[in-house]
Structure formats: structure tokens, C-alpha cells
Image (cartoon, rainbow, N blue to C red):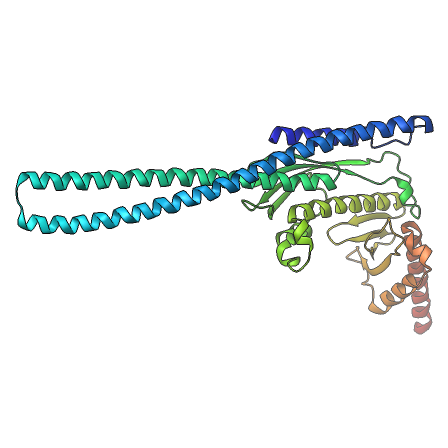
Length: 382
């Protein structure tokens, strides 16, 4: 069943990879392309139905055998209690007989009776242990079935996901993330030509034994900050305890979704920041803090806040603060900072939506305010 599940995942992943780009097809080839997709979909659905039937059969067998085992264990326990009770009564009887009889024949009969009782108890103990081992094996099988079901649901809704390895408490996943083309960033200036639109990561995820609840996560390569997502996934049950989401989702599925969103978001923001950098100013995106830093001429750093969904959405940027990266330079006064912030954040929305335009405007405002302050200082000193 494990091999079948992996074959199904590989086949679906291969189909997604082969057919991920159909922009080159002409109108005449579209019917053939759709027919091919339909055949692959029907094959995948048939294989998925087969695995689901096997899981259902295993669950049904597990329930029936568990019920039978529980009945057997209860019967064995009652038998053991009965034998123990009989042994106690026989011991009392033996003590009474020992007071009246001392012949070798009577002593031999009592010893034989006692040995038979011990043998019967040992036999029942062995049967109970064997039944417990069988029950434990069936419980393990049930956990594996539940795990396959959870992974199948996640793979159904997430593209590019593949399970590499699973040993009960650790899952190794391969996640291929497809980065949107540049045409979704119509408000940003992108000049890079060598852009990687498929990014691969591996995750080593430690889960609670018998469930899909996350305990720890490692990402390779560790080039995107996901610490906050991991922490949220660990407290998933507490976060969504009163929501219907818990009925259809798990912390593992939630984590993979959020991690993939973060990879797309951080990659696009870094791409826009690199493209907006010039010989006069360098710009970088700090994914841990979700801010953009523009290192401008004169040793001044401008820290800008990005809204959720930027740069795909049209939300404007916001200037948070200015700092002097040159420790020997004069510290920026609060009054000066407030004037620059107010002027920058009052710019028209279109200017603040585009990173290059916003950084250029902030630099222009900064220079103007510096000239005004210098002029004011010169006037007051006269």
C-alpha cells in the first residue's frame, strides 16, 4: 500500500511538472492536451480510490479484530480471577487438610493440584501477552492508515509536495514552490533576466507519535525565515480549537501551506528589492522583520514597512524610520525624522506602491529637509 501511495504521488507530480506550462500550445493542440490531462486525472483518481478502499478495508478489519481481542482479554481476565480465587480456596483447604492428614499420598495430591493451577495461570498469562502484542500491532497499523490518509489529503490540495521518508515520528518532505511570473508585479520595475521560478526545499518535520501535530521543523536550505510559522504550528490546536478548521485540517497541512506562501512572498520581495537597487543606493528585504531597508547616500538607512500581500497586491509602502549607519555622523533628530516621515507617507498612492519610486522620493525629501535645516541653522547663527 505504501508503494502504491508513493507511485501515485510520483505520477501526479510528474504530470504537474510536464504540463505546468501550456502557453506554447496552439488552439489545435488544446483538445489533445486536455484529453491527456483527463486520462492522467482518471488514472490518478482510480489509483487514489484503490488506496482508499484498501485503507477502509484495513480500518474495518481493525475494528472487528479489536472488538474480538477486547472480548478475549476480558474473558481471560475473568478466567485468571477465577483461577486465583480457586487457588486461594484450595490453599485454605490444603491448610485444613494438613492439620488432619500427614500421609505422603495426600501431600502428593495437594502438590499436584497446586502445580496444575500454576501451569494454568502461566498459560493464561502467555495468552494475554500475545493478545496484547496483536492489539498493539493493529493499533500501529491504524496509525499508519491515518497517516497515509492525512498525507494523501495534503498532497491532493498542494502542488509540488512529495513525501520522501516517514519513520513514525519524523517526516521528510520535498516541496517545490512555483514563483509567479513577473507579469503579476506590474507596478514594480524588474530588470533581472535570470530569475528562478521553481524553488526546491526539504523539510525534516518531527511530529507527535500517532498524530500529525508538529513538534519541530528543520528546512534545507534554511534561506527563508519560518520560525514564527513553526511556533504557530506547534500551538495549532490551541489556536484553532473553536474553529471548524480543526475538523478538516491538521497542523502539518497548515504549516506546509503557510511555509509555501512565505517562500513565494519572500522570494518576490527580494527580487523586487534587488531590481530596485542602483549604484547610488542598495536595497534589501529582511524577511524576519518583514521590512525593506534602503541604504542611501550619506550613510542614511530608510526602513520601510510592507503590507500583507505586497508586491502582488497594490498596497502602498510606508516609511517607518531613518537611521544613520555612520556612527560618527550626527544623530537624526526626532523632529527631522517626523518631518521626513510625514512628507514621505503623504506621497500619492501610486508612488508609494512602486519601490524604486518611493525610495527615490524619500531620498529627495531627505535632501530637501537637510537643506532646509542647514539654511535654518545658518540664519539663526547670523
